[in-house]
Amino acid sequence: MNGRKVLFITVLLTFFHFSAISCRSETLHEKLWVKLAVASDTADFRINLPVDGCLSIISAVPGRKQRDVLWGPRIMKKGTYRLPLPAGRVVNRSGVIELFNIEITSSQQTGSRGSGERQFNNPSGLDFDPVKGEILVADTGNDRIVRLAKDGRFIAQHGGFGLSFGDRSEEREDSLDDPYDVAVGGFSNFYVSDHNNERVCMFDSYRSYKGTLFPKQDDRKNRLSRPRGIKVDSENNVWVVEGRADRVLKISPSGDKLFEVGGFGWSMQQLKDPTQIDISSSGGEIYIADRGKGRITIFDRLGSFIGEIRDHLKSPAGVAVDEDGLILVCDDQTNELGLYTPQGIRLNHLGECADGTNFRRPADIAVTDSEIFMADSGNHRILTFNRKKTGSSVAWQATPAVLE
Figure 1 (cartoon, helix red, strand yellow):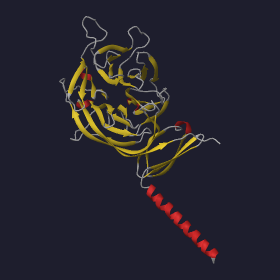
Figure 2 (cartoon, helix red, strand yellow; figure 1 turned 180 degrees about the vertical axis):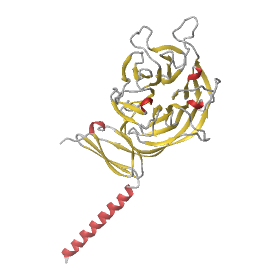
Figure 3 (cartoon, one colour; figure 1 turned 90 degrees about the vertical axis):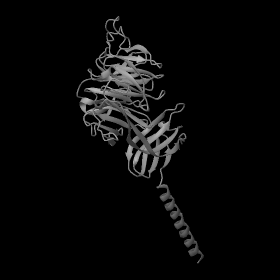
Figure 4 (cartoon, helix red, strand yellow; figure 1 turned 135 degrees about the vertical axis):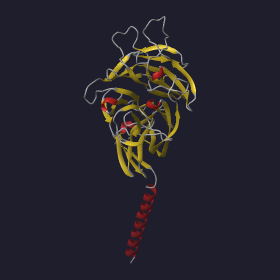
């Protein structure tokens, strides 16, 4: 009899034990959670996703404000996943798991055709200065750089038509001829790809013209042929698309050529009629709008080909990488603005403003954490979109692996 009582109690306790686990499991599956186990060579993330969305594993870089994206962003379905990473990437570090979605809505349009303060003529490039809070526009048809406040208010203009290598008695040093793009870098300096003058020129933080960065006056070996898109990376190197040579050059802050990627050809790592470029702030990946091949071409920071994006693209003209590692692309043939994962999956797209007017030959993009700016070249205007991020995150921390 006593033995049967003991057996009954044991079964009853076991039943309640599993019931508690079941209830706790149901509660956990209603929210985002992560479990991390670190072995000698592998960090094993076990992550539960309560809804569909983009997933990223992010680490804080010790001693820096920069965020290092260890994995993702990738579109994931609701469920529980096991994601192994090399232990060396997470040991003694901490970070967050983010599950999020991005919503893009039309907000504002600035400009019309003309040469006035809030007018443009086929603007082909733009950038945003986060320090001064200004939009810089390469107003190509008017041979100038225009500075706008975020609300579209005109601030100033720079440049004006002229030849940079002509009779010195008849030219201004800061004259521009079909400036294709503008890029902010350094201490609010900005650089201009002066298309027809075949040079990259620079202005300082006071917006004063400082001369030609590349090519140097006495350099007969390195020349530029129809420079297009331009971007400054986190180390203040300047990347410029050389349109006629179908390549991209990396130039040091002092104006020395460091290396190049691309070149004309039909292999995966070669380019055809490239237009714009952006550099990832986390991993240094190079994204190039390879318009002639209908794709976004991706290289690593050392110039090795690692992939491409083609989904729904026909003639990609502009590209930008946001702070979450997602890629924005505007296509001047489909007249769309698309949002992509690094794996090339399109998440969202727009083709018109809030007032129903369609995009026409969109040319370039700049992005912040809350806004997107686009040069709608064929409509001679600058468009602003709200970028709304929703989702949840959970922190993780990795302690050193214990070796037995």
